Length: 74
Picture 1 (cartoon, helix red, strand yellow):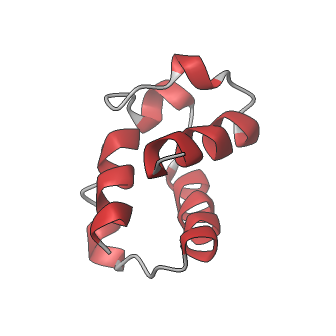
Picture 2 (cartoon, helix red, strand yellow):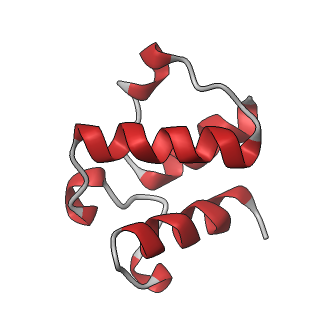
Picture 3 (tube, helix red, strand yellow):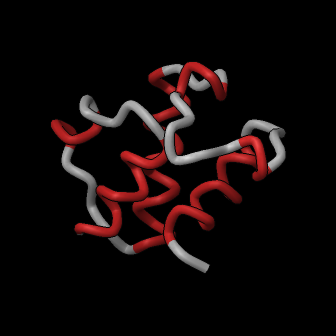
């Protein structure tokens, strides 16, 4: 399972969505995630993937795909 698929699974569970509704282009607003939700999600993903996401990078995350790509580069 690749990073994007794993992230979709976590998001789907957290926001009570089906994974099939999530795409690389799905924006946080479409999910219903606010800034606090995003920070909580980032914390969970940092732990799961054993990475540290810089605070300044979080501001540039507009979509689920952006987050997956960032984690893949860390």
